[in-house]
Length: 274
Ligand SMILES: Nc1nc2c(ncn2[C@@H]2O[C@H](COP(=O)(O)OP(=O)(O)OP(=O)(O)O)[C@@H](O)[C@H]2O)c(=O)[nH]1
Ligand SMILES: [Mg+2]
Image 1 (tube, rainbow, N blue to C red):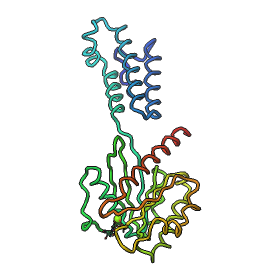
Image 2 (tube, rainbow, N blue to C red):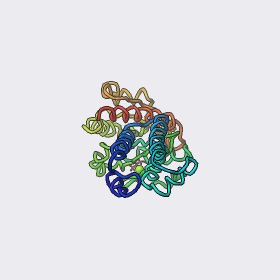
Image 3 (spheres, rainbow, N blue to C red):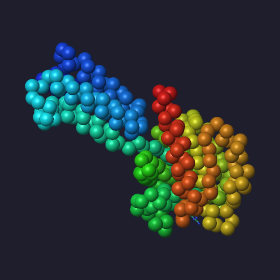
Image 4 (spheres, rainbow, N blue to C red):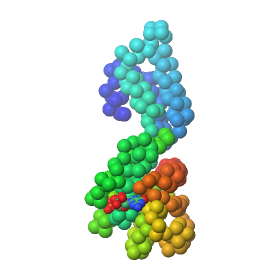
């Protein structure tokens, strides 16, 4: 911002004398507020106030009548113009919530992500073309007015050691369990316990998806909850366990909407604490 202000020092909105202090104040206050304010209504209000102040300043200083003021502003006061453009962009900006998809390999994380894309109007990859994930995949999905960003991390044991690199960036965890694989349930539980005990995920909401419910041998939510001891593990954070079938999509939307709502609360709380 200082760069913009300096650059414009020769123009009408010069940074000397009376104009400098209030314009700088307005701009800084606007930008500081932009970092904190999230609601669209408040954004409109902030933008209207800044716009009013700018126009009233131009009115005082400009010799031209009001109808020509707008053109005059654009031509002569590039600083004001870029400020208004920035404010307009900020007004239209969509909020972003970031989530990680975790779980052991073959649990169905990438299938979940691709199905979520198609449930929310994007083109998802067909399940038969999905390979085991080496590294990670990213999905950006607009859900209502929010951009949900999903990081689908490869679940093979050799990739799990890098999961923690993503933790400080996320506002939600989606942990996928293959409910039809009793042999790997203990491994899945140990992986989940390690995830939630990580310092950087303190208080972060967690959705556990009990996947592959289409398989006859799949464990029910009750059986899974008993084996995982969910009640004991998750007393300190928003937690929800939800049955789903990622192949066909049942249960995904309800689960992800719960997580998104909790991620939103978490993000706002974190912002207030800063
Ligand atoms: N029957 C059934 N199969 C599923 C379901 N979800 C995923 N699968 C299958 O499970 C296998 C593994 O799915 P992926 O989505 O690749 O699993 P992943 O968790 O991403 O695995 P990694 O990338 O290795 O970590 C694939 O053959 C999927 O078709 C489901 O709901 N029902
Ligand atoms: Mg995968």
